[in-house]
Length: 156
Image (cartoon, rainbow, N blue to C red):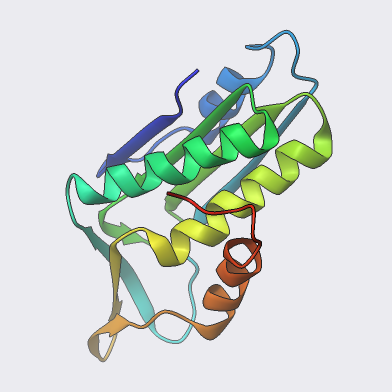
């Protein structure tokens, strides 16, 4: 089954997305997911995300398709929001169903780690003191490198 990939401005229901994975594939005994949301702190008022339409969807589809092949997933889902989001708002949902728990958990870790650095999203923080663009963090690069440096794990 092809992955479900969406980029949208509107909020999503992570419970509905998770439920769509549960029981959908008879051979899959495991479902795993990740939900990212806007965290507060350091005078943050809101977060704004931009993307490169068409290119971003293709990057997410490549990442999810690779995960499906590598971990023999029943399904993979990546939903990512763009636009302005307030503190506590959902940003990204990544989910996978697989025959076994380790495959589902690893696939979700892989997809979120790799999309943080390989999908063209730009993040701007709106603070009480102004706005600023956010650079990729070194720990995000390290998390993606863990997966991308494995010889059998090329995303082509």
